[in-house]
Image (cartoon, rainbow, N blue to C red; front, side):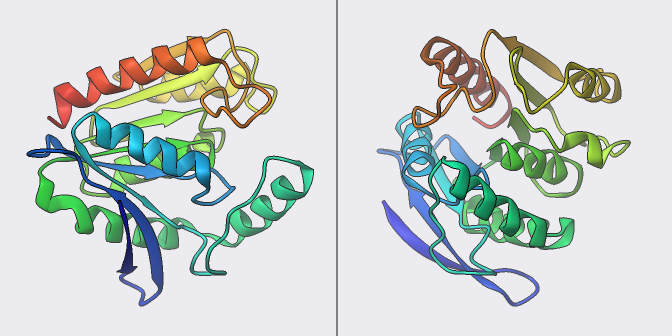
Length: 220
C-alpha cells in the first residue's frame, strides 16, 4: 500500500491511496469515495479489491479544495462533505478520475466502483472516461446526469429502504439504462459501510460478490 500524488489535466494535484495485489494483476479498479473523503472505510474497500487481484486506487477527490479530508458519518461530517461536494463540477470530477485511471492503466483494463456521490461519479465516468466497466452503489445523483448513458457495462446497487433515494429515481435510472444490471437489497443508504448506521453485512457481502463477478467478466 502506498500514497501516490496525481496531477489532473487542469493542473490540480491530488493524493491517492493505492494497494497492489500479490502476483500479476487481473486489471485495476478505481474506488470512488463518498462525500466523507478517502477515510478508513474507503481505504478498507481499496484493500478489499486488491485482495481480489486488482491494482486498486482511491483518488482523494476533495484534495483540490483542501488536502487530507477525512470526515465522520455524523451530522457535522455530512454537512462538511456536502459543502465540498457542492464545489465540484462534472469537469473537475472527470479530471480527477482520469488521473487515477491513468495511474493504474498499466495493470490492464480498468473498472470503477463508487459509493453514494462516488456512484454518481462512476456513472459520469462510464459516459465519458476510458474504463471497461462501472459499478454504482446507491448513486443518488445519477438522475442529474440523464439522459446521458454509459458507453460501457454498468451494475447498480440500491437499498429498498434508502431514505435518500426515492424509488422513482431508481426507476428513472433503470428506464434510461435498460442494458444495465440492477440489484435491490433490503437495506438503507450506505449499507456497504460498516461505520454507518445502515450497514447491512448480508447485503454488503452479496453486493460485493456480484461486483467481483461483474469485474471478472469485464475487467479480468
